[in-house]
Image 1 (cartoon, one colour):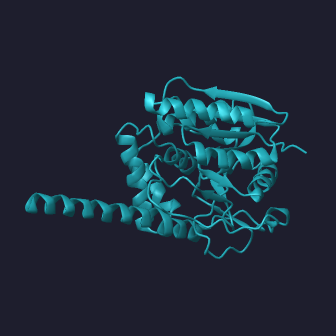
Image 2 (cartoon, rainbow, N blue to C red):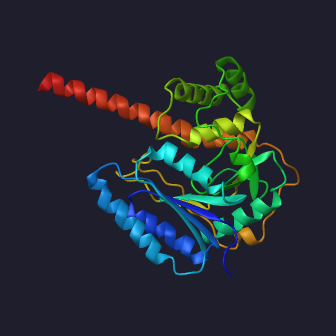
Image 3 (cartoon, rainbow, N blue to C red):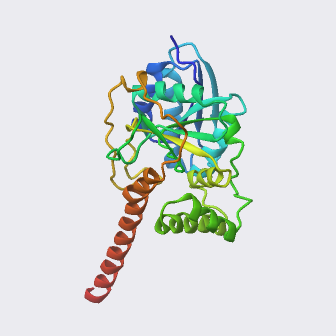
Length: 309
């Protein structure tokens, strides 16, 4: 029986990783399939973009309602992805979003479906994550609730995406600083997100960034997300063609496919701020420190070359 939750698949030019992810989509045979392909940036990218579009269409060998958004102009990761999601929710009430490098386990689809149905009328919940960036954290149940939205394979509802504002028009420095102090467990975490979002707002937008804007929408609208106990998504896109994940970093796909069939639900909806803190320290803050070290290393190399040239 075909999978009855609509799926949006977003691609660009990465042929190998895109086809691996699409094979998993093909295995569940969604009744409604949406594909967005950004326009190519250059003639060098053109062949890859057009070839990938052609191959994907050939691989759709089941009956489904298919909608395509094949762009002629390149919008960049931020605008392309966010506007593709808006396009998706012009047609459906709820659905799953997968980008070209987010390889889902079989359990991801079933888990997403169960969460979408269970919480469809609970407007406090806006996001269902398929990934768990700290698999060593101790969960009391098979999923928990967090301020963090993780977008390596996820699901949501139209009513949630309606809160999304790409331009973050409501941003006010003083009130958002106070909000971050409330939403996050420690000052390091609060300051990191305040500065990250403030800088994004001040620079009037990096067209390669959309997920942080989605986090902002979630925070200011007092929404929460679901994070599974196990990681259900493997990011296979750490390579030179990636927009954000050029360096190597990997969360194990440590899940058996029986997980989503016997879920232990939390007894009440309660934010787990320690889960958010652990994700921050093990992923976001660690990544930030690695970037700083890399910059320092590059500066040292530059001056060494200048001195000893």
